[in-house]
Amino acid sequence: MTVRGANLELRGVAKRFSGNDGDVVAVDGVDLVARDGEFVSLIGPSGCGKSTLFNIVAGLERASGGHVLINGEELCDRLGASAYMPQHDALLDWRRVIDNVGLSLELQGVRRDEARRRALPLLQRFGLGEFTRAWPWQLSGGMRQRVAFLRTVIADRPLLLLDEPFGALDGITRADLQQWLNQVWSEVGATVLLVTHDISEAVFLSDRIYVMSPRPGRVTSVIDVDLPRPRTAAQKEDTRFLAVEQRLRHELNAAMSAWGEFAGSQP
Image (cartoon, rainbow, N blue to C red; front, side, top):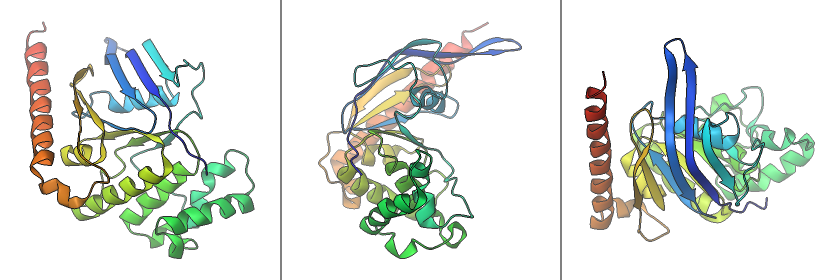
């Protein structure tokens, strides 16, 4: 595995969908930068277009306007330029853990025995060595998410897109996985773009946070998280951490209020 980071830049990205009552604007004029090896988060209310932006970056949808650049290039086909982890772990119940992790490689044409050979040290390195032969149904929710993330990492892409990967987990498991994700990310060096609704999670994991308004999704503010790494759970009680949380909460409330005034002024 030779994961390295990528430079991602969105310039004025917009997406409109056609409907029976006319076009629906999902996102409008979004600018975003995630530099090589950075961890960047998108946070905003449900329906603000975060997942739509992910689909555009991943090449699953085409933007209606604007530009998406990876390492300074606007690729005609971005499929395969990033690795995408959706909200649901999507593990295959008929494949053991080692084969679920290796699936990304098999889809690239790697033989299963070679995929297993590459997956095994990754599982051992990040605390899953004893579960290599387990079936997904034997794992807890947190363990399943670990497996799903390693399946994303082993794809060996410089850009990782994580769409609410811990959203369905309880608070204790979620906090544990945030710490684990910090460790894995610091070692693999990929650029990460995360969608989350969790303020504390965004602050704990990120170098920079983009706050989005309700639909049509626009970036209303950008917050740099100037906290030392590696980060620990104890930092969540630190005054500097709490100050960033407070600012982020304020920016989210301001975005919601501004949208409410805008929506109320429409005919």
